[in-house]
Length: 195
Image (cartoon, rainbow, N blue to C red; front, side, top):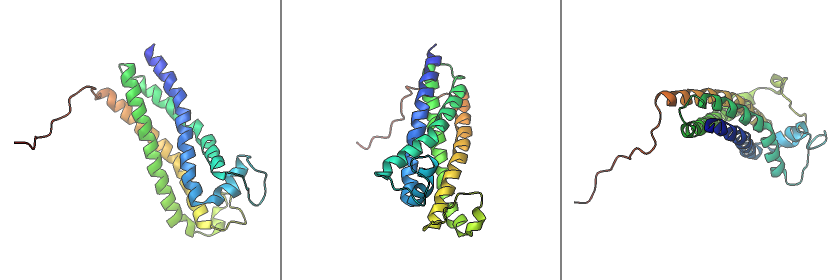
């Protein structure tokens, strides 16, 4: 019963954590390319009418809203899958501890992957001509093309990073079932410098 309640707790927390991650992530990407939001994301999320550029009061707040809306469902999905792996643990405490760590591993992996996407987008993709991005939404009035492409690449890589991180989190969880962390073990003592 406690493991089931732990599962419910994590499943309820996961979309909130995922949404907060997305809100913070989008603050970073907005800093790099405001146009990605004012000419694409705000319109895509129907926060502004279609037009050449969206002008919203307090755009950082709306960037956070876009980030939350774009990732809460990913957090929910990842949390649910990690909980299923967590059910293999002997106790609810171990399940909670290991599953939350697996979630952190997933987020860290996603972050590292999206930074790689940002670098790849800026150093490689942004040097391609506009017509190479016919599957992307590129506004005609874009001013900072390179940063727009870099942020688009970062967003694309973040979903791949979430999937890779999920695999890493599952592996971690299953590994911990075989080699559980034992809480309460004493820390090794450092040699005393006093004589």
